[in-house]
Image 1 (cartoon, chains in turn blue, brown, cyan, green):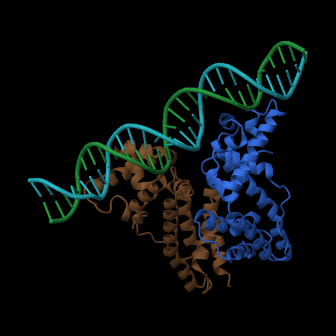
Image 2: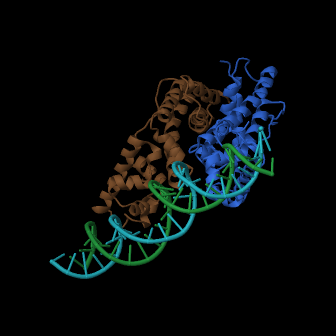
Image 3: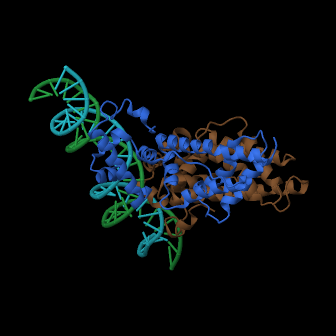
Length: 202
Length: 202
DNA sequence: TGGTTAATGCTACAGATGTAGCGTTAGAAG
DNA sequence: CTTCTAACGCTACATCTGTAGCATTAACCA
């Protein structure tokens, strides 16, 4: 399910998905990923993508509208659908593991996750992609909270998403919004916050 | 202390702060605030600010460099330095009150806070202003956690900033990053997360 | 009061965003 | 193999960003 599948139902690519259209799409998205890796998000301009892909810039604008859509579609194409949360035997361990992945995603260079967040403020398509990606992650990670409840680490009536947000949101906030330097313990510190929320009976 | 005071020590405004320089600054910052209120953040272009203020666009670029700096300087000029956290008698009440203020700031239209976050991804000056503003708020709000510790609601050795981030970060995350719709209970829900973190002995 | 020069005004330029109109090419169907 | 037309290529345009160089104005000091 592509992030602009709806758009493509009335825009280029719907009536003739074969041959040239698919080739254009592949060349453009390849250019996006290579540009991101080699030059970073600042260099991801429509002009640069067009030049590198050999596809004309007006065609890129017609099909993707802005760099946020390009980024969203590129991530969408490369997305692994098999992510599962770690299962370490304790809620603290599971949440710490998830947080470590987020820390890594936000501090790597170039950080696609940070690029997507930045793009989301200018591009509705990027905002939708960001939101759906993480909502999917939280839905998949809910099982970690349910396991904790069965072990007695979490209250039975606790909302899994609230626990996960309590654990993850401070990581996004510190590293992506406030750009605080990443400390060694940040993943575990806020995982403990998630544990505290889970344990609290409401 | 202005957000680009350092810049102005070597750039326009340092040697001749009187008369014309001050007038130019005032006219430009007035144009920024009125543009923000009337047209929103998307309309806040250097060209529009220059046109409205009557100051030439190259002068705006010379003194502020980008719209993020304009925004940061404008906020800085209007900033009230007297904020204090609510004192309701319970930690939950205090944190809920703080969160309600953040919810209001992020959902009002136009939201200057959201505009500043958006700008921070493109403008170092805006990023600095955002960070310093909220660090100041957390420092001032720490007293609420200390009061809670004296009442026995919080562990004595708990880090106040961690509690505040646990309470506030999910609000920023949901409303500013993920753009989830604001629910009625969101302020209190994550204030409870802060309370849980505070109560937990570490 | 006049001289110095900081600060501003102005023109020009290079690059990026995003759109409009029209010509061209190549899938898809008969 | 021919026809139709979706998708693409191309040119042109308007707007915005950000910078460079030079002319002009007005603050500040002697």
